[in-house]
Length: 264
Ligand SMILES: Cc1cc2nc3c(=O)[nH]c(=O)nc-3n(C[C@H](O)[C@H](O)[C@H](O)COP(=O)(O)OP(=O)(O)OC[C@H]3O[C@@H](n4cnc5c(N)ncnc54)[C@H](O)[C@@H]3O)c2cc1C
Ligand code: FES
Image 1 (cartoon, rainbow, N blue to C red):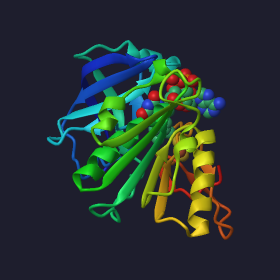
Image 2: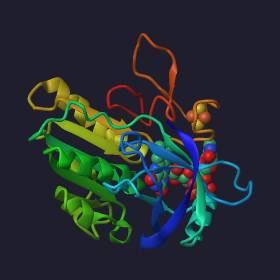
Image 3: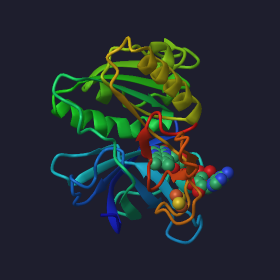
Protein backbone atom coordinates (compact mmCIF):
# COMPACT_ATOMS: atom_id res chain seq x y z
CA UNK A 1 0.00 0.00 0.00
CA UNK A 2 1.40 3.45 -0.87
CA UNK A 3 2.08 5.75 2.04
CA UNK A 4 3.93 8.95 2.84
CA UNK A 5 7.33 8.12 4.30
CA UNK A 6 10.46 9.97 5.42
CA UNK A 7 13.66 8.12 4.61
CA UNK A 8 17.17 8.85 5.79
CA UNK A 9 19.85 9.48 3.16
CA UNK A 10 22.86 7.17 3.52
CA UNK A 11 24.66 8.43 0.40
CA UNK A 12 24.03 10.76 -2.54
CA UNK A 13 26.98 10.53 -4.93
CA UNK A 14 27.73 11.54 -8.52
CA UNK A 15 28.39 8.37 -10.60
CA UNK A 16 28.29 9.73 -14.19
CA UNK A 17 27.65 13.07 -15.90
CA UNK A 18 24.77 14.61 -13.87
CA UNK A 19 23.78 11.11 -12.66
CA UNK A 20 23.51 10.59 -8.89
CA UNK A 21 23.19 7.44 -6.82
CA UNK A 22 20.92 8.04 -3.84
CA UNK A 23 20.96 5.39 -1.11
CA UNK A 24 18.08 5.48 1.38
CA UNK A 25 17.64 3.59 4.64
CA UNK A 26 14.25 2.15 5.52
CA UNK A 27 12.20 -0.90 6.22
CA UNK A 28 10.87 -1.89 2.80
CA UNK A 29 8.20 -4.56 2.31
CA UNK A 30 9.67 -6.51 -0.62
CA UNK A 31 6.22 -7.86 -1.57
CA UNK A 32 5.07 -4.27 -2.08
CA UNK A 33 8.22 -2.57 -3.45
CA UNK A 34 8.26 -4.61 -6.67
CA UNK A 35 10.40 -3.70 -9.73
CA UNK A 36 8.70 -1.08 -11.88
CA UNK A 37 6.93 0.73 -9.05
CA UNK A 38 7.95 4.31 -8.43
CA UNK A 39 8.48 6.88 -5.69
CA UNK A 40 7.05 10.40 -5.75
CA UNK A 41 9.81 12.47 -4.17
CA UNK A 42 9.58 15.88 -2.54
CA UNK A 43 12.85 17.50 -3.55
CA UNK A 44 12.86 20.52 -1.22
CA UNK A 45 12.00 21.28 2.40
CA UNK A 46 9.53 24.01 1.39
CA UNK A 47 6.81 24.36 -1.26
CA UNK A 48 9.13 25.29 -4.16
CA UNK A 49 9.07 23.43 -6.43
CA UNK A 50 5.52 22.45 -5.61
CA UNK A 51 5.41 19.21 -7.57
CA UNK A 52 7.05 16.01 -6.47
CA UNK A 53 9.34 14.18 -8.93
CA UNK A 54 8.63 10.56 -9.91
CA UNK A 55 11.67 8.26 -9.60
CA UNK A 56 12.06 4.53 -10.08
CA UNK A 57 13.36 2.06 -7.57
CA UNK A 58 16.74 0.96 -8.95
CA UNK A 59 17.40 -1.64 -6.26
CA UNK A 60 16.50 -2.83 -2.78
CA UNK A 61 18.76 -5.20 -0.87
CA UNK A 62 17.46 -8.64 0.10
CA UNK A 63 17.07 -7.57 3.74
CA UNK A 64 14.73 -4.74 2.65
CA UNK A 65 16.72 -2.10 4.53
CA UNK A 66 18.46 -0.16 1.75
CA UNK A 67 17.00 1.30 -1.43
CA UNK A 68 18.92 2.78 -4.38
CA UNK A 69 17.53 5.50 -6.66
CA UNK A 70 19.53 6.76 -9.65
CA UNK A 71 18.57 10.17 -10.98
CA UNK A 72 19.70 12.80 -13.44
CA UNK A 73 20.16 16.22 -11.81
CA UNK A 74 19.07 18.46 -14.64
CA UNK A 75 16.19 20.61 -13.43
CA UNK A 76 14.78 22.61 -10.53
CA UNK A 77 13.73 19.62 -8.44
CA UNK A 78 16.54 17.18 -9.17
CA UNK A 79 19.24 19.84 -8.61
CA UNK A 80 17.82 20.38 -5.10
CA UNK A 81 17.90 16.62 -4.59
CA UNK A 82 21.56 16.53 -5.61
CA UNK A 83 22.40 19.07 -2.89
CA UNK A 84 21.06 16.82 -0.12
CA UNK A 85 23.56 15.26 2.28
CA UNK A 86 23.77 11.96 4.17
CA UNK A 87 21.81 12.16 7.43
CA UNK A 88 19.06 14.36 5.95
CA UNK A 89 15.60 12.93 5.33
CA UNK A 90 13.56 12.78 2.13
CA UNK A 91 9.78 12.80 2.03
CA UNK A 92 8.08 10.58 -0.54
CA UNK A 93 4.88 8.82 -1.49
CA UNK A 94 5.77 5.19 -2.07
CA UNK A 95 5.53 2.72 -3.59
CA UNK A 96 3.26 3.90 -6.42
CA UNK A 97 2.04 2.44 -9.72
CA UNK A 98 1.97 -0.95 -11.36
CA UNK A 99 5.02 -3.21 -11.32
CA UNK A 100 6.58 -5.18 -14.23
CA UNK A 101 4.60 -8.43 -14.60
CA UNK A 102 6.98 -11.37 -14.02
CA UNK A 103 4.62 -14.20 -13.05
CA UNK A 104 5.01 -15.90 -16.46
CA UNK A 105 8.85 -15.99 -16.34
CA UNK A 106 10.19 -19.51 -15.81
CA UNK A 107 13.66 -20.84 -15.05
CA UNK A 108 15.74 -20.78 -18.27
CA UNK A 109 13.57 -18.17 -20.01
CA UNK A 110 15.54 -15.65 -22.03
CA UNK A 111 14.87 -12.07 -20.99
CA UNK A 112 15.99 -8.95 -22.80
CA UNK A 113 16.18 -5.65 -20.90
CA UNK A 114 16.34 -2.59 -23.14
CA UNK A 115 17.06 0.69 -21.38
CA UNK A 116 17.78 4.20 -22.52
CA UNK A 117 19.41 6.93 -20.41
CA UNK A 118 17.63 7.56 -17.15
CA UNK A 119 15.15 4.80 -18.09
CA UNK A 120 17.85 2.24 -17.23
CA UNK A 121 17.46 2.19 -13.38
CA UNK A 122 14.21 0.20 -12.90
CA UNK A 123 15.51 -2.53 -15.23
CA UNK A 124 18.37 -3.32 -12.85
CA UNK A 125 16.08 -4.24 -9.93
CA UNK A 126 13.90 -6.24 -12.33
CA UNK A 127 16.90 -8.08 -13.82
CA UNK A 128 18.25 -8.94 -10.39
CA UNK A 129 14.91 -10.46 -9.32
CA UNK A 130 14.54 -12.43 -12.59
CA UNK A 131 18.11 -13.75 -12.47
CA UNK A 132 17.46 -15.01 -8.93
CA UNK A 133 14.55 -17.00 -10.40
CA UNK A 134 16.84 -18.66 -12.99
CA UNK A 135 16.08 -16.51 -16.03
CA UNK A 136 18.88 -15.74 -18.51
CA UNK A 137 19.33 -11.98 -18.71
CA UNK A 138 20.64 -9.96 -21.64
CA UNK A 139 20.75 -6.17 -21.39
CA UNK A 140 21.04 -3.55 -24.10
CA UNK A 141 21.63 -0.10 -22.61
CA UNK A 142 21.74 3.07 -24.67
CA UNK A 143 23.30 6.42 -23.81
CA UNK A 144 24.25 9.56 -25.70
CA UNK A 145 27.97 9.46 -24.94
CA UNK A 146 30.65 7.70 -22.83
CA UNK A 147 30.30 10.29 -20.04
CA UNK A 148 26.63 9.33 -19.59
CA UNK A 149 27.18 5.58 -19.11
CA UNK A 150 26.37 4.16 -15.67
CA UNK A 151 25.73 0.75 -14.05
CA UNK A 152 27.49 -1.24 -16.81
CA UNK A 153 29.34 -3.41 -14.26
CA UNK A 154 26.15 -4.02 -12.28
CA UNK A 155 24.26 -5.17 -15.39
CA UNK A 156 27.22 -7.35 -16.45
CA UNK A 157 26.78 -9.21 -13.16
CA UNK A 158 23.27 -10.11 -14.35
CA UNK A 159 24.35 -11.38 -17.79
CA UNK A 160 25.50 -10.35 -21.25
CA UNK A 161 25.40 -6.54 -21.48
CA UNK A 162 25.80 -4.36 -24.55
CA UNK A 163 26.25 -0.59 -24.37
CA UNK A 164 25.38 1.73 -27.23
CA UNK A 165 26.23 5.40 -27.55
CA UNK A 166 24.88 7.78 -30.15
CA UNK A 167 28.28 9.43 -30.73
CA UNK A 168 30.20 6.12 -30.69
CA UNK A 169 32.46 7.24 -27.84
CA UNK A 170 31.78 3.96 -25.99
CA UNK A 171 30.43 0.55 -27.01
CA UNK A 172 28.41 0.16 -30.18
CA UNK A 173 27.93 3.38 -32.15
CA UNK A 174 24.22 3.81 -32.71
CA UNK A 175 20.89 2.90 -31.12
CA UNK A 176 19.72 0.10 -28.84
CA UNK A 177 17.44 -1.11 -31.62
CA UNK A 178 20.52 -1.86 -33.80
CA UNK A 179 21.26 -4.74 -31.41
CA UNK A 180 17.74 -6.14 -31.00
CA UNK A 181 17.17 -9.69 -32.22
CA UNK A 182 14.43 -12.24 -31.66
CA UNK A 183 16.23 -14.60 -29.28
CA UNK A 184 14.18 -13.78 -26.19
CA UNK A 185 10.96 -14.90 -24.54
CA UNK A 186 10.07 -11.71 -22.69
CA UNK A 187 11.20 -8.13 -23.34
CA UNK A 188 11.14 -5.30 -20.81
CA UNK A 189 11.99 -1.73 -21.77
CA UNK A 190 12.16 1.75 -20.27
CA UNK A 191 13.55 4.95 -21.73
CA UNK A 192 12.71 8.07 -23.72
CA UNK A 193 9.58 7.95 -25.87
CA UNK A 194 11.37 7.88 -29.28
CA UNK A 195 13.35 4.84 -28.10
CA UNK A 196 10.21 3.12 -26.75
CA UNK A 197 8.46 3.83 -30.04
CA UNK A 198 11.28 2.20 -32.04
CA UNK A 199 11.45 -0.81 -29.69
CA UNK A 200 7.67 -1.18 -29.81
CA UNK A 201 7.70 -1.16 -33.63
CA UNK A 202 10.34 -3.91 -33.85
CA UNK A 203 8.68 -5.96 -31.11
CA UNK A 204 5.30 -5.82 -32.83
CA UNK A 205 6.75 -6.83 -36.19
CA UNK A 206 8.68 -9.73 -34.55
CA UNK A 207 5.56 -10.90 -32.77
CA UNK A 208 3.45 -10.61 -35.93
CA UNK A 209 5.80 -12.55 -38.21
CA UNK A 210 5.61 -15.59 -35.91
CA UNK A 211 9.24 -16.48 -36.65
CA UNK A 212 10.54 -15.85 -33.17
CA UNK A 213 10.09 -17.25 -29.70
CA UNK A 214 8.90 -13.81 -28.53
CA UNK A 215 6.13 -14.30 -25.98
CA UNK A 216 5.47 -10.92 -24.42
CA UNK A 217 6.81 -7.43 -23.91
CA UNK A 218 6.33 -4.66 -21.37
CA UNK A 219 7.38 -1.01 -21.29
CA UNK A 220 7.56 1.55 -18.53
CA UNK A 221 6.65 5.13 -19.48
CA UNK A 222 8.40 8.14 -17.98
CA UNK A 223 5.55 10.59 -18.52
CA UNK A 224 5.50 13.96 -16.76
CA UNK A 225 3.42 13.76 -13.60
CA UNK A 226 1.82 16.09 -11.09
CA UNK A 227 -0.19 14.37 -8.33
CA UNK A 228 1.17 10.84 -8.95
CA UNK A 229 -1.94 9.26 -7.46
CA UNK A 230 -4.55 9.37 -10.23
CA UNK A 231 -6.34 12.61 -9.37
CA UNK A 232 -5.18 15.27 -11.87
CA UNK A 233 -4.97 13.51 -15.29
CA UNK A 234 -1.61 15.23 -16.05
CA UNK A 235 -0.05 11.95 -17.09
CA UNK A 236 -2.53 10.31 -19.47
CA UNK A 237 -1.46 8.16 -22.43
CA UNK A 238 -3.73 6.94 -25.20
CA UNK A 239 -4.78 3.30 -25.24
CA UNK A 240 -4.48 1.38 -28.53
CA UNK A 241 -7.66 -0.56 -27.83
CA UNK A 242 -10.06 0.40 -30.67
CA UNK A 243 -13.00 -0.43 -28.39
CA UNK A 244 -11.74 1.92 -25.74
CA UNK A 245 -11.58 5.66 -26.23
CA UNK A 246 -10.25 6.35 -22.77
CA UNK A 247 -6.76 7.38 -21.78
CA UNK A 248 -4.64 5.57 -19.20
CA UNK A 249 -3.20 7.43 -16.25
CA UNK A 250 0.49 6.50 -16.28
CA UNK A 251 0.74 7.00 -12.50
CA UNK A 252 -2.01 4.53 -11.58
CA UNK A 253 -2.75 2.26 -14.57
CA UNK A 254 1.03 2.34 -15.29
CA UNK A 255 3.84 3.26 -15.50
CA UNK A 256 4.27 -0.30 -16.81
CA UNK A 257 2.03 -1.42 -19.69
CA UNK A 258 2.01 -4.33 -22.14
CA UNK A 259 4.12 -3.02 -25.01
CA UNK A 260 1.25 -3.16 -27.51
CA UNK A 261 -1.26 -1.39 -25.27
CA UNK A 262 -0.21 2.26 -25.59
CA UNK A 263 -0.08 4.52 -28.63
CA UNK A 264 3.23 6.36 -28.37
C1 LIG B 1 7.47 6.44 -13.40
C2 LIG B 1 8.65 7.34 -13.61
C3 LIG B 1 9.90 6.94 -13.18
C4 LIG B 1 11.00 7.77 -13.35
N1 LIG B 1 12.20 7.33 -12.89
C5 LIG B 1 13.25 8.16 -12.96
C6 LIG B 1 14.50 7.78 -12.39
O1 LIG B 1 14.64 6.69 -11.81
N2 LIG B 1 15.53 8.66 -12.48
C7 LIG B 1 15.38 9.90 -13.10
O2 LIG B 1 16.33 10.67 -13.14
N3 LIG B 1 14.23 10.25 -13.68
C8 LIG B 1 13.16 9.43 -13.61
N4 LIG B 1 11.98 9.82 -14.15
C9 LIG B 1 11.93 11.12 -14.83
C10 LIG B 1 11.90 12.23 -13.79
O3 LIG B 1 10.74 12.15 -13.00
C11 LIG B 1 11.98 13.59 -14.43
O4 LIG B 1 13.17 13.64 -15.17
C12 LIG B 1 11.99 14.65 -13.33
O5 LIG B 1 10.67 14.85 -12.90
C13 LIG B 1 12.57 15.92 -13.82
O6 LIG B 1 12.61 16.78 -12.73
P1 LIG B 1 13.60 18.03 -12.71
O7 LIG B 1 13.42 18.72 -11.42
O8 LIG B 1 14.96 17.55 -13.08
O9 LIG B 1 13.12 18.83 -13.97
P2 LIG B 1 12.17 20.11 -14.12
O10 LIG B 1 12.11 20.36 -15.58
O11 LIG B 1 12.52 21.19 -13.20
O12 LIG B 1 10.81 19.59 -13.61
C14 LIG B 1 10.07 18.70 -14.29
C15 LIG B 1 8.74 18.69 -13.56
O13 LIG B 1 8.09 19.91 -13.86
C16 LIG B 1 6.84 19.67 -14.35
N5 LIG B 1 6.84 20.08 -15.75
C17 LIG B 1 7.84 20.71 -16.38
N6 LIG B 1 7.51 20.92 -17.65
C18 LIG B 1 6.29 20.43 -17.83
C19 LIG B 1 5.42 20.34 -18.94
N7 LIG B 1 5.74 20.80 -20.14
N8 LIG B 1 4.22 19.74 -18.75
C20 LIG B 1 3.88 19.26 -17.56
N9 LIG B 1 4.67 19.32 -16.48
C21 LIG B 1 5.86 19.89 -16.62
C22 LIG B 1 6.57 18.24 -14.16
O14 LIG B 1 5.86 18.08 -12.98
C23 LIG B 1 7.89 17.57 -13.98
O15 LIG B 1 7.84 16.58 -12.97
C24 LIG B 1 10.86 9.02 -14.00
C25 LIG B 1 9.61 9.43 -14.44
C26 LIG B 1 8.51 8.59 -14.25
C27 LIG B 1 7.17 9.02 -14.69
S1 FES C 1 -0.08 12.48 -12.24
FE1 FES C 1 -2.05 13.08 -11.59
S2 FES C 1 -3.31 11.56 -12.56
FE2 FES C 1 -1.28 10.88 -12.97
